[in-house]
Image (cartoon, rainbow, N blue to C red; front, side, top):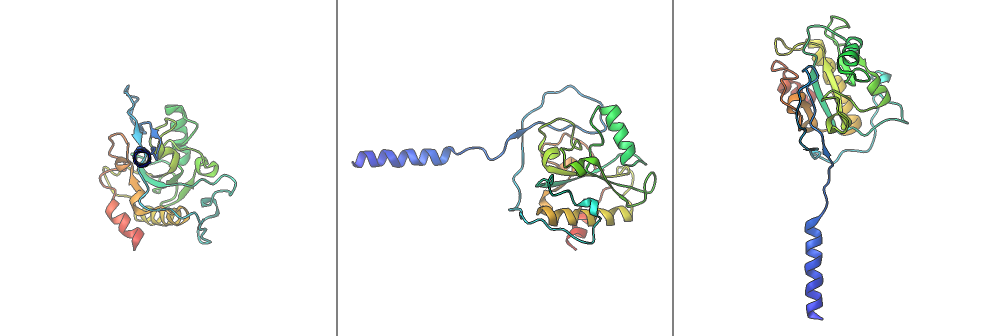
Amino acid sequence: MLVRGLIAVACGCLFAVSGCALYDNEQKPKIIYSPPVAETKPQIQEPKAAEIRSTQKVSLETVPRDWIPAAGVEKDWTAIIIHHSATDSGNAAIFDEWHREGKNWNGVGYDFVIGNGTNSADGEVEVTYRWHEQTTGAHCGGTPGNWANKDGIGICLVGDFTKEEPTQRQMQTLVRLVRFLQKRYGISAERIYGHHTTPGARVTDCPGRRFPMGRFKSMLSG
């Protein structure tokens, strides 16, 4: 009997240690504005959430109605990823055309586009079809199965932030939008990334060295 007991304990310990993976492996994303490059795609593991996310949906009466997805299609998003367009001008419609014709995608890769006063108003939030339909994005590459596209909300600010900072209105609008998304989906500040710091992202400058990420996160908590 003693021998059988020892064997049972040993087997139980081995089972507890073996466990099973918490996350699926994902494909490596590509830079949006780079030409295609032949490469092998290493397996990427999705990062763990910094905290347990709330399942309670928070709606704010002060935000535009089209920021709130329809109840029947709304997803449980886990991250927010900030991009720049790397262009001096543009808007959602222009990027939609570029991505359809240049990338052969279904349309614009982002969920939201924030204008800089060129082809849309300074600080204007354009909500794309991807957000309305709650479909997988293409802002960290167009490949299916990419965790950042599947679970991350892509926000693009019009401008080239390798040369200059976003406008004041763009920053104010970005803070308002991201605060809403954080509250609605329980996304912590640790799960807000620039494209270049997104786990698994290919080397890129996006959203540009002039994008004030530190100041942006201070504004969020202020």
